[in-house]
Length: 129
Ligand SMILES: [Mg+2]
Image 1 (cartoon, rainbow, N blue to C red):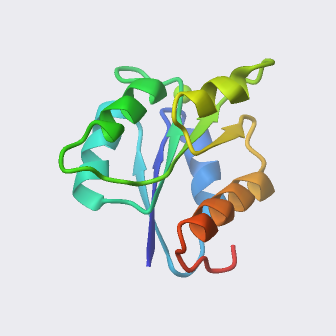
Image 2: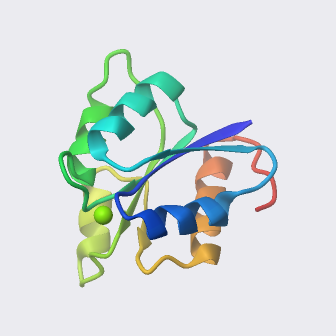
């Protein structure tokens, strides 16, 4: 079973991401704010995290920083999901330590592709999604 945590404060966006990744063998955990996402990273130790950048409270950058600072460490890959799609934004996300970048509006095939790529590179058995 592969556990995926999806954090997004926009309900429609969260639903779309959930639908994109709904498949046998995947357990989806959801969160609608950064602080809660951080707690769930610790309690659920997900295999992959999809993190919206613009969230109230802790934003995506702050959550990522907090995840990377956890002790004991939780070494999960984290994908940024964001409407920041200006020139240089992708580079900025990756330079911040995100393992990938999904632009909003979200394309279902792109989400699946990114998740498959992450799972393959972490040697998890990725079911077909
Ligand atoms: Mg948001």
